Image (cartoon, rainbow, N blue to C red; front, top):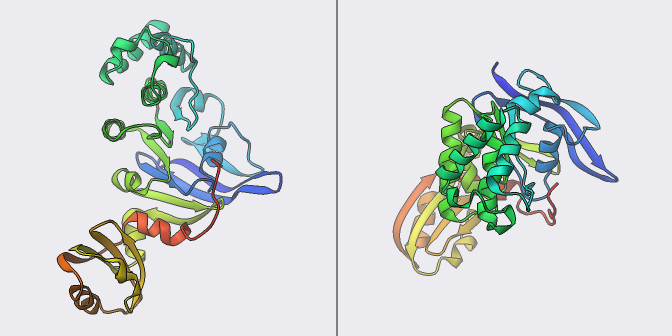
Length: 307
């Protein structure tokens, strides 16, 4: 099997709003696949159709070599939704035991695995505490454990870093990479491009329910060319956007990523910058996924909600 998930012309409408509009893409088996887009792009609706929570108006979903739904979701797929689905009055160990048993684990094994994961993620002392006593970040850890404790073949993560501090985000990234090395295919849905660029090899960027970019990150960056310059400097770089040949500037304090028009002279940019700034670094680079994302969908208004 070379494809873990295949979507073909998937469409879903709510009233007059078309949340997903003829969406097609394949998730290679064994990959970490980024499902990217701004809030409201259609990511969560797409995931809910993959998980058979919502039925598409038209189109098809295939998972792990078969149709979506039924035993394949119960036995082989783990799912971390964006909204927390924990039982606030249950104790952590009891809730994970319950979650594991739903996935087909024997109760003693479900409890053993749950407690082992709590210990690994530094939640062991909380195993007899109620879910409602935990912080948002701690609850996200517990929900993550529930999604992976049955060792799924496919793991779907919808905004997994929500509510997590940078330290715990790194812990999650390491776990995602570890699970992938062990053979788990992972769909990673996010609007945070930096996280996607670090974790994913292949992506689908969706906007208004349609795929506007698909492919490996390397292929996509190559498509957008090498007309991007990275600058580090001392001084006020706010004038850079007004220079000839400059299409867009992403400012970052004493750094900037400058996108040039086709055929623009990078050396002319350097000479102009040196007249007003002390240049510490200047290099022609492939654009970041963040800048490509902004270029494709960032100029639009709206995008509220979690569709």
